[in-house]
Length: 403
Ligand SMILES: Cc1cc2nc3c(=O)[nH]c(=O)nc-3n(C[C@H](O)[C@H](O)[C@H](O)COP(=O)(O)OP(=O)(O)OC[C@H]3O[C@@H](n4cnc5c(N)ncnc54)[C@H](O)[C@@H]3O)c2cc1C
Picture 1 (cartoon, rainbow, N blue to C red):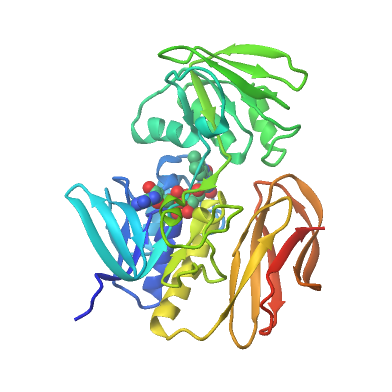
Picture 2 (tube, rainbow, N blue to C red; picture 1 turned 45 degrees about the vertical axis):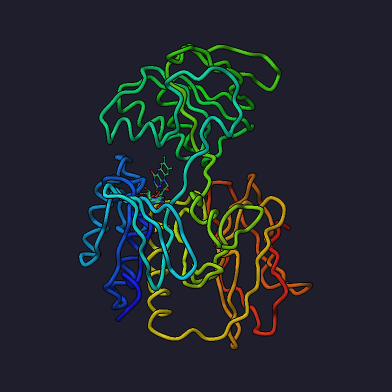
């Protein structure tokens, strides 16, 4: 008798989790359970109605809910269980889950964490002031508007200028809420420059080199105070304040478990096949690279599904692990670990920078340069380095550096 409940349990039913299930299914693995804490499947796209998904996968822009419907059609044989939160992860493929019926333990041959990314809310940003209603992230705003059909405010300020910040502008405008201003701590927007045209068309000023220094109002937000680089302060009357972007991977489960983490990024160590340091657990999607586009997470999830199926179908070959370290100015690399077999390895690597950067990117193993090419990088843009060769004998950590 088998001593596990399912071949594979996937935690999270966003684009990455759905893709892993699809990839596994196509590779002949059918005993898959996807666990989702929300009542609906779909992750972030389920409450993102503007057409910002599908360009890579379906070659045309489609809305989040339509995108999820189309992705689900590609994996008809997979079981999804919603309203189920995974509360703990243990060695040996064990999980603890909380369902409306109570706590339960499950065991799988392989577990996949596809728990996504979240924006940094007000508290970790250490913005002082009172705690009135009306302060939220873009994700919360979208849930209010498009999942609960509630209008949480009438006049709002958006903090941040990443792509998601412009999604916030779109959502506000769509719901008949007046966007008053955007606040950016640096001298330029974090998204690609043409996004400023959208703000201009909506008549929304962007305050550069500025930050929110006070939040006023007792029960409901009444105003925010913005400070510019010259120290001048101005108060904007509003009842909505949207903290957008500054994404972090939702790795709460991984952090509380036995999994090894990259100490600098707080992201679990994962190799070129998305296997973690415990090779019976994989981590995929925006939990490992907060926050790339839905399509990128989906395409990666398909490949991760194939890699897990290959591992379940064949005994693992002996490998050596090599850690990848990121230099100054690099936010994270994916993978951040390599498993190298007897024939060496040719691999690709994605990275994000912390500030706009134009110049060489180098991958080194000791004194040996494995890759060097010029790139033009923005913090919100995924940079892909391709065809890097590592010889079998190498076990020195790799370094990825700007320069
Ligand atoms: C506010 C916001 C707006 C965005 N807008 C866009 C956009 O317009 N276009 C775009 O391409 N990308 C957008 N993104 C990026 C988005 O992260 C990706 O599009 C994509 O959704 C990532 O897929 P994922 O499967 O990795 O994560 P997610 O879509 O976040 O899915 C993760 C799922 O895991 C579930 N989960 C987490 N922890 C547990 C647990 N312990 N137990 C059970 N379930 C759990 C969550 O409920 C969620 O459903 C946005 C991100 C945010 C935060």
